[in-house]
Image 1: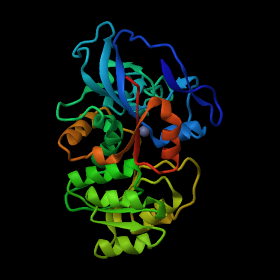
Image 2: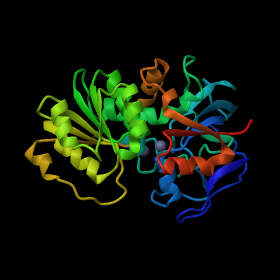
Image 3: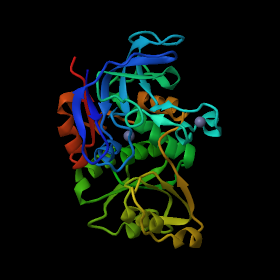
Image 4: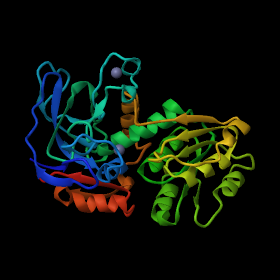
Length: 343
Ligand SMILES: [Zn+2]
Ligand SMILES: [Zn+2]
């Protein structure tokens, strides 16, 4: 089968090459990929800014149908529409595995960089990471289950947004737009912020429920957030851009004793006005990926259209056009690009 593979370490080194078809071992299932989303992480892997174990098939956000069952797998049938949490390898015994925070397991390896992923025809994962897609949810839309689980983890599990909270979402990439939707589902009010390049994404943010938007290249975000909140600053700020300028604006836009939720990855050491954390008694919460518990809730939100996947999908390309998909994602010309194997 042809696959998008990081073939060796170093910048670039991603090619569309022939790989052996995987077979499921005991406790594993093989899934025929229906659609797989390109994520910012894939671009970081391409540029050697995120660790991977080449040669490895990329792709960690996907949906598909059960194609083969390994020995001992119960509860699934061939053809079932499914999605899967990427944490393919974990110890199963550490405190993080036991609490469901499996991405924190020190032995964890995920599909798409640690083990073979979904930018191909078939992917093998442990059955315990697999969730059936609800009948009300289109299989292609279900490819957004992983980033939706990331937003659920940030909004419900790491932070706690309450109805009526004023919330700044800084950064309107796919994760920011999903955080926005989950905050809306929880009854929070949203101010969304992006750059001059994000005109289309800010329009979408308003359609998805943001009360107001700010173009930070044209407006002072801190002043705008204070005014929007009625003076004191916002209750919660989600930093979803992974940019120092965005973090500084979040620190300035928060009310005293507010909560900063760090969702974006900076990829390097940065400078920021950290003094605000002590002076304003801010609560700083980090969030990374999802937990086991994030997934059923993410699927429920998608199935009930409390999170809309359709407007987030800007492109569906055949797997062979992966380079175009990566280019569009890197250039932020797209929102979410899905790759689909040719049938
Ligand atoms: Zn991702
Ligand atoms: Zn563990």
